[in-house]
Image (cartoon, rainbow, N blue to C red; front, side, top):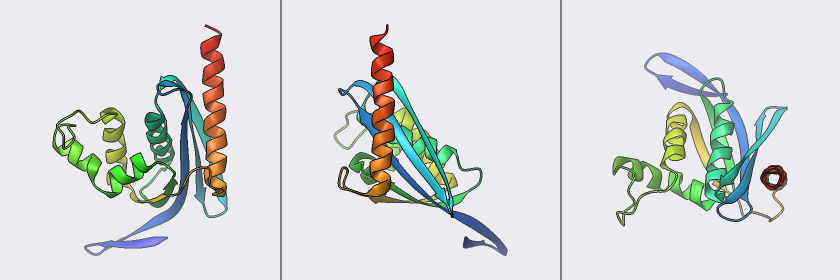
Length: 163
């Protein structure tokens, strides 16, 4: 646990590891996401998908759904293979988009503002450090998340084909 001091109060934050990945068949198309949450020796895996989405939306959704699992403010090390997610947070792009009415520097609309708004709110609750890893490069947790995301994408594909 980490201690943060606010005035005379000591707040102890649990340290949590989160790993996420997103998948999409076609872009847009059916997609899925996978996440692993780890606290000490405890681990939780979750996944989900949507029939019509984009890869970036699934990458964001994986991060959001993982952070939503936390019941109290935590210190989080979050690993993702999404440059879109990691760079937008670490380089301050998402905050800038929000500050400018969800417009990018080129004045074009920032995509996925609904999900960015949720993620930025969650980042006000938790102390999150983002770590980018290259996808499909053998990172054990990233490979597991990828398999979960792809499995969810396949579920979405098969449910769409039944219609």
